[in-house]
Image (cartoon, rainbow, N blue to C red):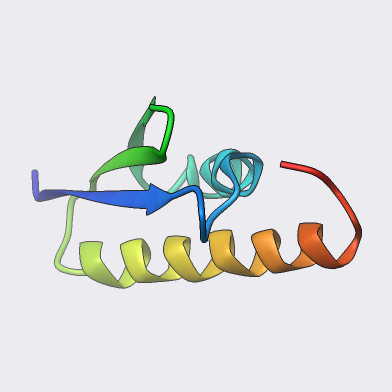
Length: 76
């Protein structure tokens, strides 16, 4: 099964946004999240040739939610 890992640095991505995105994409990908002080590491697995498409979509959605949370005045 193809897999990849991506780090979401907390200066750009809010952890809550990454968690919400994880919930939204849980039915499409196998996702494992590891939290550290400075970043959230997300491991992805998916059967098929479109893994990177989903990883890019996941990243974009997490960034969108981060911006939305920032605009709504939510704290990290």
